[in-house]
Image 1 (spheres, rainbow, N blue to C red):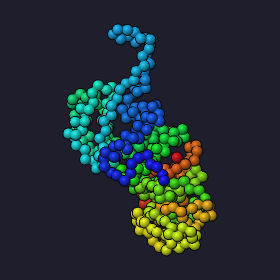
Image 2 (cartoon, rainbow, N blue to C red):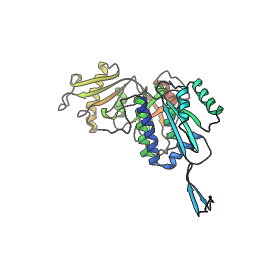
Image 3 (cartoon, one colour):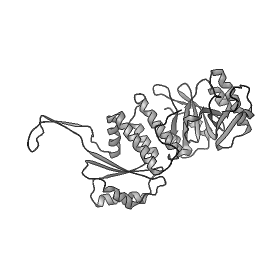
Image 4 (tube, rainbow, N blue to C red):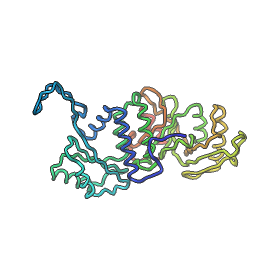
Length: 338
């Protein structure tokens, strides 16, 4: 049974807030330095939250040999799922701050903030001379800011936590531009068969990310890209038999329409897996079917191979808001590295 760090199957705002806060708290426990780097990025201040060491600092009654102090901060967060922020509620949140050195009101939502709300709260802060910073982030931006302070190699263990949070947000449809997201999966010996059958499979317990495109990673390069057209959980009825046909499998379609050809390709994939000692019979597997895998060479030039799945924002990488399909994306990524 795969254990997730963050709650799923629930889209209430308090759950999403709790998940966002859990990520921050885990970051603080993982590395105080990384946590303060994250705060500095939010505040956009050329200052440090690190402890300050001063020698011979005089107070009212004495002069101690040394003082170690740290600026205080407070972050107040309001989460919405449909951009239904209310200016009155946000103004009331401002009263949560008192004498902290750094004060931040942060709103989270899957989408960018409506300009009217943003202008109203910023004007209120300015008119009342409040030393409070206000920031709005989408969940995608929130994840990116945390990823930007992490090192792909040294912080690999914590990136596993961030990736699970990103997958959780993806599952709950909290990420913007999901139609231009590509999930990349490492593939080993089966890559040729995956491309031939236009499918990829994974243990059903591992969950999935809601992305339009699927990339296959092998030998430090994304070698094939396809548009996902169907997703289904496949389980084998007679687990003692290796002589299977389409009548021997249970099919639970999660998205799209599964065709007879896809069913036959499932059987071929299950049988082919025996050649590599992979067992697709004992447990249910989630199959991802693409229209067609198109060859590409999107090379990873940073050290170490990709160890787990990774989500790419194609809009950000390729500087385009729309694509005609996987073939266009495969051609464009041929000129890119990561």
